[in-house]
Length: 119
Image (tube, rainbow, N blue to C red; front, side, top):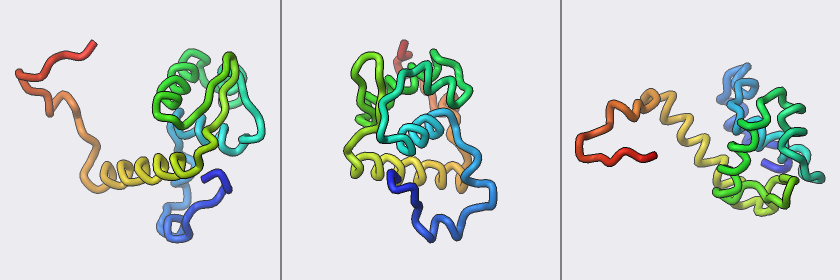
């Protein structure tokens, strides 16, 4: 992913506009990956992507927990572990494919009386 490339099969099988529709997490990861020679403040990332700063901060924190970004207050950068980044991207692609084939899961439908509520 950090090379700015995708697998040719993924390219060939994609719809014309498939790569334009990215969620906020994808946009942040791609931004940091494309600008991997710099570290960024969350507010600057938010400005660059026209997102809410608090939302960007929350997403960056989750990405850090997954080992996809590095953080030294107040700066954020993409991980230097390219294998981890590629693995996360592949997993994300598998989830997207499953959602497209089978529909997105509605967690409320899966909830049972025995499940504890997480707060």
